[in-house]
Length: 400
Image (cartoon, rainbow, N blue to C red; front, side, top):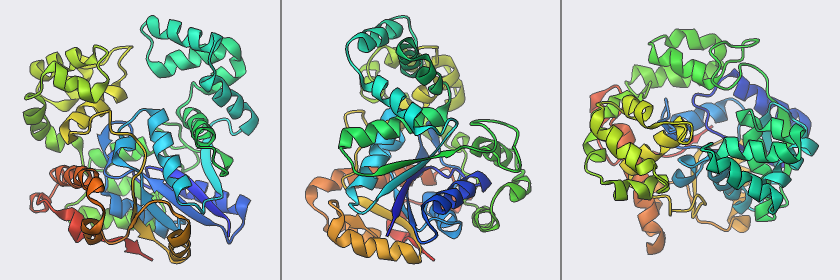
């Protein structure tokens, strides 16, 4: 069986995501299985997911995925390189994934590989990267400048977010020495963070904006019917949309306890901790703190990730790689993959969360981090009766 991995957030699942899954299956064969490594309740842009992870996984399986696994929490709140490496290493550890499909603005694997090779190169390229960083550029912009100096065409790829992630996926596969074969799908629809759908295909940020404004019905034509039904059911129960502003006071009450040295554990210790410390005391909302702290050197997403890491007590020295596999949703072909994983996967597989208690003691601190993150996320549900903790042990994967 061809088993194709997909790295995703599905925040929320929309028509463009459905197109990507359908196109992947068209290229690899109708009988191919698709396994998604999906971000949990916190996402790489440094935010709370607008819909809880088990529900987003359900939408994905209802709309074409066969098995949805949770990307490690530490990877979800990392830069593009750590996020990509964490998700790809999870898929590689399954031992049965044959392909990795991803969308890219420029779906030319030869060109993407050139950019990946240069981004890992040493010598003159490394010198150019250090020089660009010394000017105050953020890492991603400095990398693009360094790659462009050696190969302008390859460097131009790094100007768009999906190309950047595609390059990082290739880097991760090479670093792991993985036999997984990449499949690049041209990205269609609204651009990243675009506020205008293209041919009925929106960006996820456009849908999140509609949900934040209370315009859920406007999302209906831009989402597969099954995905919209999951969203509508969650909203009817007071479990969506989940907005970060709902936990502003909880965030502030924790962040104001931290010294600059303590903040450095969560942001890298290159001076950002001092800006964060000042911004936390001078402002009264998460958004205002981020606006005050960000600069050209410290991009907004990095600031948001650092603050959420501090809230979740998730220091940067926790690696982005998986120590276990958590199943969020499964379809018929997904059951076949799970059976195969019994002999191929090198990590323990968690289907029913109650079995976490039987895992080795060395894994318990990481499991506790996951449980804490889910309990803090629950504080943002619109319905206050859902703010109770311990939800981890009351939820099981969606089964189609």
